[in-house]
Image 1: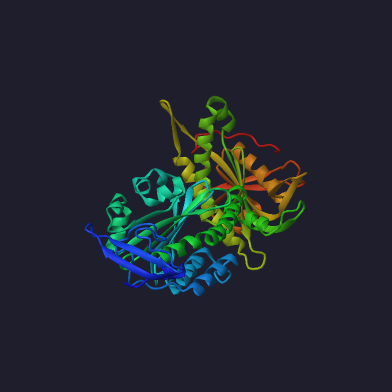
Image 2 (image 1 turned 45 degrees about the horizontal axis):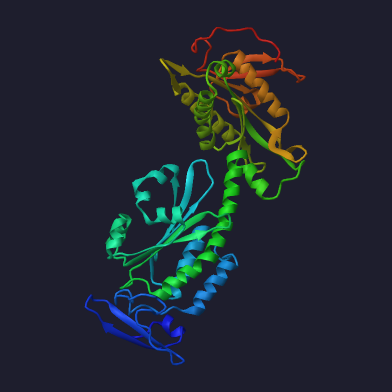
Length: 464
């Protein structure tokens, strides 16, 4: 039987093998310098079966493996994305003598909806990227998997697929069906102390050799550092998107962080408000009010985002969103048509929203004002506390129009500028003096809305 390369590298000049009644092969080595053979106590520190020794395994190419680790340390610059980085890492490992089959990387993230992302590679296939929600942590599939041990205890888990120990992990039954012979899950420790996970499989007869396993373990530090950098940047992007919106988040990450950094842009403007919110807050527990607000905002946010808008701010029960219009190739009519579709969709969602409280069921109404114009967009604030928001006469007018919608018991109202860009089923509600503006504004409402249809009576108008 040939000596494994790892033993040769340690100075072994002979490899002895003797049979035992229990079927295990006992290994002995004679070290250079006249040391006596040490039976059952070589560097692997145990008797191994001949299957574990994988006698026909490929030898590792140390030079190629070194190039891979240097590439990771340098930031994997030739890989423009995380999936491509993973694919190239696995391809380079195969070139270095690691006969990989299925590889998985599992990274926790900081996100309100998902616990983490997973990347799965197989030879000749695109990397599959998936997400896991928080319910996954309590699922039997996860709790009975090797990854649960890695995340919980931060230690590696190895299982030769045909060994009795592998039977305790149902996931490995699927790997057995793919002719996998060996599986190892390795922790990736990040600087903040959090554990993330990787899993590696092979279809090599006899499984991974010790040299191949050592190579995978040696790969973890540089791979973990690079993944941590990618994770932190993605986390920053997610948090910015979550709290200030996608467009603002991109600008902040791009360096637009100084107070006074602003741009102007043309946009359709959405400003909405929940009717009767003050009374609702007064008679219901605060926790219930928060739950209602979240459900109410869900009714709008999904419609806004589907139709190309970006939510800039939640202000109590109010919501401010913009639908940007490209300065050079933007189609104002098309953008306003998308806004109107979003308003109709949100109106239907809110009408369908029922919230049971005891023996009663709460129902809700809201109002939204639509306008189009030029806005100032950027960093505004005082001291070291800034807000990325938008201001300008167009925003002020939208806020005044939303108040008119409430007084007229209308759900959707629009300015003259919006209606000119998006003609259709509008009713002229008349001209209204607007506080702070020198000219009155003509206001329009949807033709399929009337106060009587909504159960209201008409009221007199006045300056707002």
